Length: 184
Image (cartoon, rainbow, N blue to C red; front, side, top):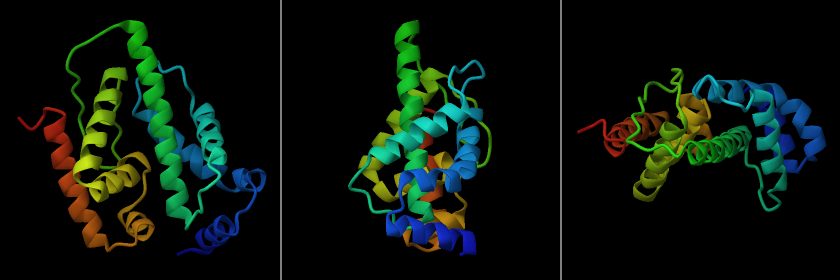
């Protein structure tokens, strides 16, 4: 663990105020938001900066959360961003009144995949189904694909071995392909 990760972990554990935390994590949250926005449709109305601020406000409203370490915080931030983008996708879909089966291509955690509103919702539903079947595989997916964490960071955040992360990530991708209809 680097010194900056150790410092952030210490701050999170000590319950630092949000006003002090945002300047420290802002740049990393912005990178995460840009990564998430790169997967969204190109005409999306939400910008990375707004996504960072909306996600941080969601996290700040969580009063009962005790942050364990950096990975826990950024995993929660990734989940908040995912939920915000799902809400935007639902709104866009309801405005379009479109339908049809969505096709989502899942690649490596660091690959850029542009998703439209239908695909975002299909992926959200598939992740929810995966979470019911295998919560750990869903958490690995959330941290790797949505959070952009490395295998090492994911293992550290979950308190498991890197080998477990590889195994869960492989299973999750295969299962998501099935759930999204690409495996048939």
